[in-house]
Amino acid sequence: GKPNFDHLLQKFGEAVVPVANCDVKEYNSNPKEQLPFKEYINYWKEYIKNDYRSSRGCLYLKDWHLSR
Image 1 (cartoon, helix red, strand yellow):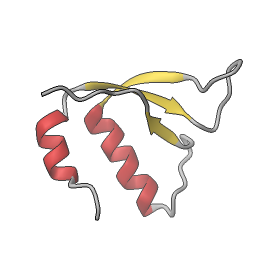
Image 2: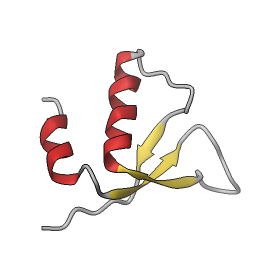
Image 3: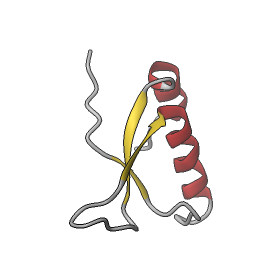
C-alpha cells in the first residue's frame, strides 16, 4: 500500500522530472521546474515526515511518463 522508494530510486533516481508547485499560481497554472527524481523523492519523504508540510510548498510530480 506504500511506494517502494528504494526501488524507485534504484530505477529512476537520475531521471530529470517535471515538478509543479501546487501552492503557487502563474496565470492559469502552477509553475513547473525540472528536478532529479532522487531530489523529488527526498522532498516527498520529508513532506510525509513533517505531517505533509514543507517550506517548498506542495510539489507534484506532473506529466512524467515512464517508458519501458
